[in-house]
Length: 233
Image 1 (cartoon, rainbow, N blue to C red):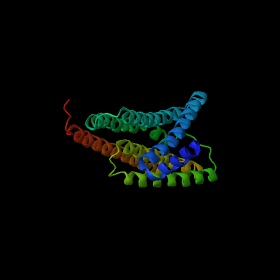
Image 2: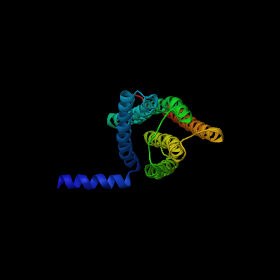
Image 3: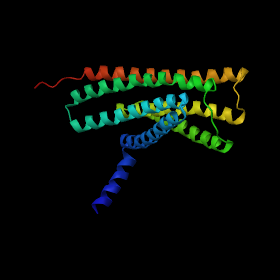
Image 4: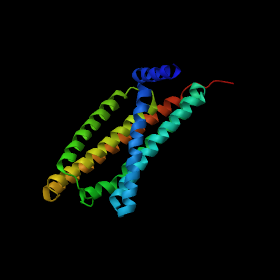
């Protein structure tokens, strides 16, 4: 009976608590990203491919920032500090997490350059490519919708996880672009090379903007936290 009650309580909280639902969803994303990290590390070691090494670093950074958000929120909730002290510590961590997004952005320069210069080879048929396109469309749509929903959220952990999801989705768009080009034509020359380069670095520029917005929010959040009145002992 206790197990059944806990099971029902879990799904009831999952339905009604947006922050809790966000963290549960992020655990799934964390697991998938961890698998992709290990897979690309294996390919890089087995075939000595620079592409897989570069993209493994990117996935590893995503794993790190998601894990850091989980750990930070867990410690914050468990510590049960006075509100003003807890918010100040939380704001400091939020600022560090936001700044870490720029590390992910710059880690992508090498994989993006290799895609544009055709130094990554794929062996997909058209059917998996179409399936990948459908999944990427779903991923980017869901991540953007959820990102917009968190604009007024007071939970920094929720906002950070949603921002990381958008970053992840945008990189999936880059990979999809290259995959479809390789499947349908296999060449990036002339005007197609210019278009591919422009779209790739336009997406990368969008990632920089996204990181800048997250950092600005974190700075504002920390400023507000520092202005909270201190309890006198």
